[in-house]
Structures are given as C-alpha cells and as structure tokens.
Image (cartoon, rainbow, N blue to C red; front, side, top):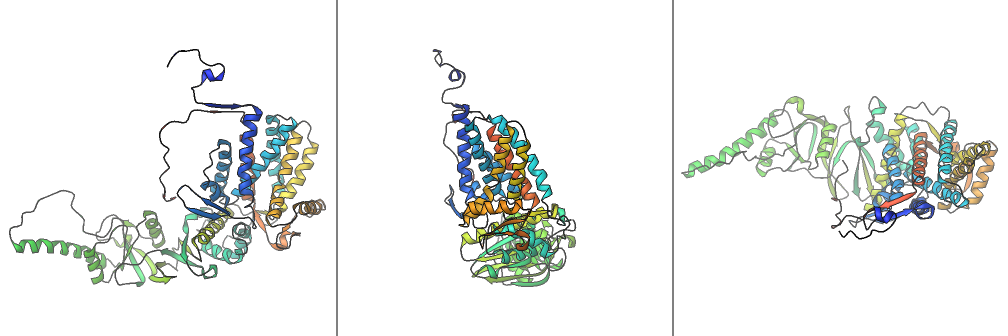
Length: 544
C-alpha cells in the first residue's frame, strides 16, 4: 500500500470500502424507516381477518400464510435495524409460540411515533426514557385487567382449554376455530404429563394427508408414519415391538479377509452359513416375544424373507428423530445392531395397522391405554398450502396450551385490552412532567394500532370503531372490544374472546425493547463485505 496522504476524518481511520452513516437523518431515521416497512408487511396479516402473504424463498418454495413468524423468517431481511425486529418476533415465537405479529407491528408503530417526536425536536434518549417508563406502567395496568378467577384452571378440562386457545387459532384460521380447537385440545390433553408445567410441544405431532376436508381430521393416540409396512403382514394387535437403529440386514465384518474356496460344496456351505446366521438372528427376535420389527435403516431381502417366515411385521423409519418419537410412543429402547433383544427393551402398541387415507398408505401406531406420550393430529385438506397453514394454526394452539400450563391468566381479547391500556397511559402521561410525557403519550397512541388494524383488515371504519371503543371504556366498560363479524363494539366476555396474559406481556415487552434498541443507534459503520462467492446455508435441514 502506498503511503500517500490519506483522506481526512473518519475516512483516514477506517479501511477503504467501508460505509459510515451518522446523525439523525442518516442513521436514526433510516433505521426507523426500514423497521416501518417491515411492520407494514406484517400488519395487514394481524388478527382473524388478516390477509395472506405469498412468499417465495430463495429455494423457490412457496408459502401462503398470514403467520408473521413464518413470513419474517422466509423474507431474507438484510437491513440490520429491521433484523432487530425480526429477532424480537423470533424471541416471541420461541417463548410463547404466538403473538409474533403483535410484537413486530407494535414495535414498528412505536418507531413511527418516535420519528414524529424526533421531527418535533425531542432527543432519542428522552424518547427512550419515556418509552421505558411507559412499558413499566403498561405492565402494571395489564395486571389490573386480568380476568377474575382465570388464574386457576384445570388444564385437562376441554372447555377451559378451548376458551383460552380460541383467539390464537382464530387469528390463523378464522371461521375454522370451532372445528380446530377441540381437535387440538384433545391432542394436548392426551399427552399432558402429571405435572402440566413439563408439557412438551414436540409430543403433539401433525400428519398432513392430502384430500378430504378439515372436517375429516382426527386425533390419534400414537403415531402416524407416512410409509407402508414391508412384507405381507399389514395389521398386528397388542404387539411387542423391537426397534433396531442400525437396520435389519447382514452386516459386513469390520476386517477384510480372503476366503479360499476349493470345491462347489464349500461354496454352497459358505452361502448357507450366511442364511443360517440371518435366520438365527430373526428367530431370536421372534422368540423374545416381538411381533413387529422397526428398522432405522435398510431392510435386507434375506432378512425380510425370514421375517415373513416367522410372521413378523417390518416397518422402516428412516428419520432418526422420528425413530426417537416412535420409541417414546411405544416405550421401546432402540438397539444398535440386529441381535436378540432383552424383554425390557421391547416396546408395546395396542395396534399397528396399514391404512389407506386419500390414496396414501400410512402406518398407524395406536396406544390407547396409558403411556400415551405422543398424539398425532391427522390433518386433511385440499392443497399443500392449506395443510401447511393449518399446521401453523395447530402449532400456535399447542404452544398456547403450553403457555397456559405455565400461567393460565387471561385478559380480554379483541383489542379491549389495548384500548384500556391506551386510555390509562394517556392519563398517566398527563401527570408526568418533563419531556418524557410526550413519549408516553405517543406510546399510548401506539396501542390504537391494534383496534385500527383489526378494523381495517375487516373492512370497517377504523375511526368510528376507535372512538366508540374509547367512549365505552371511559364509561367504565373495560371489557368492550370489536366484534368483527357484525362490525360493532361488544363486551368480549359474551363472545368468549380471551387472550393469554403471557402472550400480551411478552409481546409488548419485546416490542418496546426492540424499539428502544433501534432508537439507541446513532451511527452505522459497515465494513467492506468480504470477497468470495456468497453461499446459501444448507437447505432442507430438519428443525430438530
């Protein structure tokens, strides 16, 4: 590098090719703008009347959904500030499994209001301190809005579960929630352990089978494997099960050796010993009492032949995660290589049968009595996109169930809570002195985004709705929300629309944190990107 006179200022300090943005106009407002764009995308998908987005990712996979978590995951968001909002949405998705849309849209709204304050001349640090005060106050008010008597709940009572789950499922599949909720509730209650706090989301599986309609969907205690059984035995009742992780086949020896064969008899005997060895192994399995062999890898032809002879049903489960779940369902222990299993290692299932559903042969493993640690929702629908979306609705329902096992308190849904929070925070802002009060008032105003968006997505007049909501709440009717079907304001307890307290609590907290993080940035310094071709991460990996 030639030691000529370098540039001046920051150019002289940093390597060439870097970008440097600073100051209100360049850094703060640009960041806010990027976040606003992201929240504009998710906002129209908020609530039961939310519109669907069609996202095609870099692998040409098509998503048609209104689930914000899926949308922002599949959009490859490049802007660093908008990424902070995406991370807040992901945190919400992992913590509660529902409410990612509220988190992202609300954070976007907070930042939009912060932009107005900055243009009025407030400094970002004053806005941040106001927002922090406001979120602390919000959480206090949220505690006052809790529904009386909702803190005690029987997680095995279907009615109570459905009433709390309905809002989460309706926001994904509006109009179908009365069909879906009982199915999800059944599936969750079946696998709920003695201590509900240990509920594992992974124990509710979803099997998507094309054809039929939602009303054909059912819950099965046990698992549904999407492949046919090998061999001719297609149905076994009250069966003991041996699970072999390494596959059922003759194994090659570890060492290489050369065998010198001098006559035809020796060659025959050599082949026969292999047969005899396989037969001996399969016979040992059959004698241990097992009626079903589940293999984690390939099943050899010779082994299959002897399994048929000893009337053993043979299944193959190629995914090791699926094999683990199978072991959980049946209580089996996976044995590494083909050998005689201990009686303790065998699993048990009430029935294993191959059935044809919509032209696809599936193996259904049922476990009716105890030990039902996995249940499967069999979903039917006309297209893959519909099935994927139904699966997301079920995921939300199951995650909501997990959240209510931890904390079953509820607050009124349908934007009743948000309007009440807005009203109380406005009052609080008037008592504050100092410049914080403007930020608190804007924070309160941001809550109006929820009823406004719900009304707009349903094609109603948002201004009328918000003003009549304020009027009702000022009169002391705290539980009045929007009835989207009739387009009027109603008491939500009559419509039975409740949101979980935890969902709201974390969504608002994460949104406020994300907004403050974005506002705290006053300079962006980007190094020159490293050279070399860009590589996409490996596709098609299982989430487990």
